[in-house]
Amino acid sequence: MIPAPRDVVAGSGEVRLTAHSRLYADAATEGVGHWLRTVLREATGLPLREGRELGDAGGDGIGLQLDTDLGPEEYRLVSDQNGVLVEGGSAAGAFWGAQTLRQLLGPDAYRRAPLDRHRTWAVPHVTIADAPRFPWRGLMLDVARHFTPKEGVLRCLDLMAAHKLNVFHFHLTDDQGWRLEIRRHPLLTEIGSWRARTKTGHGTSPLWEEKPHGGHYTQDDIREIVAYAAERHITVVPEIDVPGHSQAAIAAYPELGNTDVIDTTALSVRDTWGVNPNVLAPTDNTLRFYEGVFEEVLELFPSEFVHVGGDECPKGQWRRSATAQARIRELGLADEDELQSWFIGHFDDWLSARGRRLIGWDEILEGGLARGAAVSSWRGYAGGVAAARAGHDVVMCPEQQVYLDHRQSPGPDEPVPIGWVRTLEDVYRFEPVPPELSPEEARHVLGTQANVWTEVMEDQARVDYQTFPRLAAFAEVAWSDLPAPAARDFTGFERRMTAHYRRLDALGVAYRPPSGPLPWQ
Ligand code: TNX
Image (cartoon, rainbow, N blue to C red):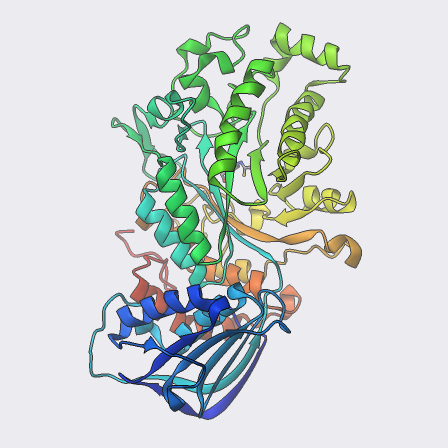
């Protein structure tokens, strides 16, 4: 099983699912029952009719129910002569238990139609007690650099659920594209969601492709994605990146940029990567514009946290802008870093007043962290450590460890040879809580997140290749109570991966093979 459950006691028999097997779910776990029945019907062809009460199907049924003695995401799975019983501390707990049950049924339980209607399906007798280490087990997908159509996002949510990950950080805007329909500012997608030519190819010599790239999600698409995620007990945290990484927005609405420094009407959606000097102007007009954006964001995304980016905002234009300098003086600020803090702080107050919480990349520490802000620590652990010590919540996602765009081996045949080498074993030995934090400070580490930036991943096969199998190792780090990195049993994990590769095969995931890249990858 991956991620490894906390406690597993194997029995000797098995529960055989048959055409008579029933699936019972109590009122609290009804949605989980619906999900489980749907996927198991598809995979097995068994009817799994609704049970009227727990145990009404004899020894070959499945029961789901709430047990309020368990923690919210905790579950207990008992497979014995009475059938299979999954109890969760909440519907979420029962859902993670249902994921474990699916793993126990074998790789073909992940298919969308039965290979053989006459085969037998069995759950080994076992007692499992399990709960996650962290409440924030995240995956960030960058849909701005390369667009992932809605179907691909839904598939991503299914893959997250199968790995017991529960926060989908949706990187919706960047210099190279704006992907979210905003009704009051329609040009954000009409202009901002397409770039005229795009880069493709991999590694150190990316190629130009003289074709447009783009796409966006309508607000109904987003409602569908959020609902689909909620059915899988996944929270979608939207990211609108400000004040840097905003060229797509400036291309659509040039008045958002530093118009007294450059001719922003000449900017188009960016078609190169990296840190970009063209950033938002720190004006009232910009603040009002983005309040409008965030108003629609809050209507669409019920998540407690809203990500405002805050990363990689070069201050050159603000230094040269009379408007920005006047603002610095008027606010009595020391410098441009404090101006960025003021800008982020504005949205911290704005979100807090609406019952939400701001989260941003660790640059938001520079010039002073806004009062209620949480931090995504990406430039190593330092930002996260500083934030936790100052009493702020933290999500650990250090780029050296869990940036899945980075290469997976030192070999020249890696199809995406950028960044640091991060092997499967490196990810398995990633520790989200740095030892320098006291237990009290460490409580601020909400969890961890793997980030998939897509500059060099122009399609789903490429994203799959970079994300898997490393996401399986990451999921175990985020969920399971593993020992300190050096003491982790990577050999045992690799052994369990053998079965997991069969699940990924059944799910149609184009992972990097353990033997290394094939020539055509
Ligand atoms: C840094 S991580 C970025 C992204 C890039 C990524 C590439 C972060 C907050 N900013 O814009 O896509 O590196 O690895």
